[in-house]
Every structure is written in C-alpha cells, then in structure tokens.
Amino acid sequence: MRAAVVSEFGGPEAVEIAEVEVPQPRARQVRIRVAAATLNPVDAGVRSGVFGGAGTRLGLGWDVAGTVDAVGVASAWNVGDEVVALHYGVAKPLGTHAEYVVVDADAVAKAPATVDAVHAATVPLNALTAAQALDLLGLRPGQSLLVTGAAGAVGGFAVQLAARAGISVTGLARAGDEELVRSLGASGFVTEGVPAGFDAVLDAAVLGERALAWVRDGGAYAGVIPQAAPQAVRGVRTGAVEVGADGARLAELVRLVEEGALTLRVAETVPLQDAVKAHARLAEGGLRGRVVLVP
Image (cartoon, rainbow, N blue to C red; front, top):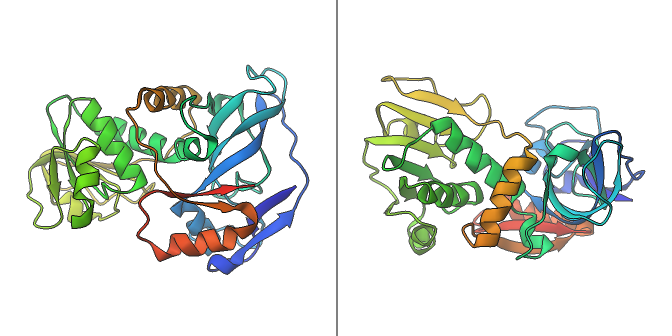
C-alpha cells in the first residue's frame, strides 16, 4: 500500500509516498481502509524534526475516517463499520496518511451519519484537543473564557463546546474572522488590546506568557502544546493538554456533529500522492479549515 512518510527531516519536499506492507491488527485493534485523513500542524512538526526520531522512518497523520476492513480478537467493531479515529503518536512507523491504518479499538467511534468522510476526518484530533483542554480548565457555566486562535480548527471547536456549556466566550482572531467566530458562539471578539480579567484562557494560538497576562489572578490557562505551558504566576493554574485517544469521548463529539452543534471546515481536499503539495499549502498559512488527504 501507499503511505506518506519522512526519512529525513525538512520542508514539504521531505514527504515521501512509499510502498509499505499493509498493517495487520493485533488483539483489541482494528484495521481501517482510509477514506480521508486530515493534515494537521503536528504533521509538519514531525516532518521537520520538532519531535525527534532522526534515523527512523516516521509515518504521518493522526486523524482518519474510513471503513473497518479487519479486526483483531476482542474487538467490538465489525468489518464494514464506518468509523473515525485518532491515531496518536509523533514517532510511529505508519500514520493515517496511508491507504490502511491499524488503531486500537478503543480509539474508534462510529462516523457521523450526517457528513461525508472528508469532513468527518477533521473531527478526532482537533475536537478532542479542544474538549480535553476545556476539561483542564474546569470552568463552570457563566464564567468567562478567552480563546486565542478562535478561527482555527482547535480554537473553533473550543468556542463551540464552551459556548454550548454555558461559558461566556470571547474569541481572539484576525479582524476578518469576526463573523465566523461569532457564528461559532462567541459573545465577544477582540483582535488587539485584549482586556485582562478572564477566568481562563484556552491558548490555541500558542501565545504563551502574553496570553497568560489576560487571565485574572487565581484563574486558569490551558495550552495546546504538551509540556509547554508558561510558568504559573499570580496564582494562575497553568497546564497544557496532551491529547489522548478516547473513542467514548469521540463518540460524544460525533453526536454533536450529527446535532449540528459542531461546524466542520475543510479548506482543500488533496490526493494522497500529492502530499508534498498539501504540506506546502499548510506551510503557507491562512487556512480557515483543514487540508484533507484522500487515497
């Protein structure tokens, strides 16, 4: 089968489409025939060597939507099930940017019935990251939250999930994104001159200490890069989410998609064989939605 991998770190041109063996599921695993797989900034990080792994071949891709085509023993899934899943890991030999992928059965959820596979593939990594970051913050209804990067994939999901939970959300993004961010449920919007005093900040734009300054004394800060939260000051509780595969939580998010409570945004769809072009487009920036690869 074909798979996108990197053997040497570098820019988009470092991505290779290699012929590799079709992976086989072990106990409590399933194999998914990939219909669509999202390209995320973490893939660019793997490609460029941010996470290490020099001297080995690394697979790319965390999100997948597709069809179960083989199951290991003790799996509750059946061949033919339409599913989505998060394939966690920055140093795995094969990722979801491939024709087939094997994932743990408990990382899988039924695919949303209301959208196609391309849109479904945008859910696992970004929506789980947003949900788990909100868990870290532990806000109650009526409290105030600033989401930086509110027009991005993680930020957009965070705005919707927080607003649905009764939290007063302000989005920080570019001026041209105000209509989008407010449509996601933000009651406030800022581009600069951010006031201090929020109960919490979810820092999807990775502003670090700058964003920490907008949290009230004793509030909370959640970042989206593991182990990269700024040092706590003024009694502010700081942390950063390390997203985890969670099929049950993913199923809850899928239900929200089916209810129309989560907006799925696809910027472009690119064939797997053109993965280099997809990485180049991601590097250009300015996307309002994800680039999705299709085998």
